[in-house]
Image (tube, rainbow, N blue to C red):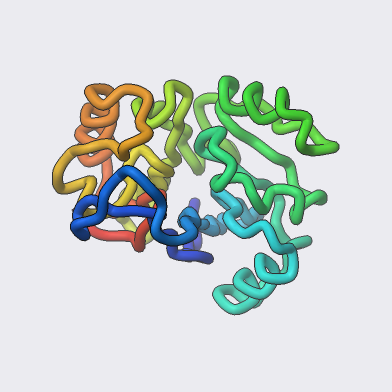
Length: 203
């Protein structure tokens, strides 16, 4: 049972073709959307986005009133660095990702603690782990119900609302056909989508 979910940071892209920008070079710093999912007895942070520990703590406090040590678990949707920049700020939490993602992050040697592989679901089925390859082969999203609505935290399976509407992957997608199919598949099982680099929206 999910009691509440909140956006901690609203992500943005370094370049956006739907704003008339070229894919050739970055125009701004990009950050990913970070989401907090709260159950009856857990706090799960998805894609910790900010490299600066004080800034990450400040955003968590500003949006929820919670401290980093209140997080029970962190889930990373895929191995790109912007989706786990803030991972080290949550040493007391369990770190999770789909097996291929966990392996890719652990092989970097970046962290003193391992990301644990997770499949199927978390917290006794409260949060479903959904394969959504395309942006990367190992990309996984999360799905849960809150207030009677199916919420999908998509990571970069859905970059922004514009990319969702066009059923298109970002310029650095590993497989554009798979990316389009992942968007269709997630849309079919969602009432609300939280994209990887934008605010949430209804489908």
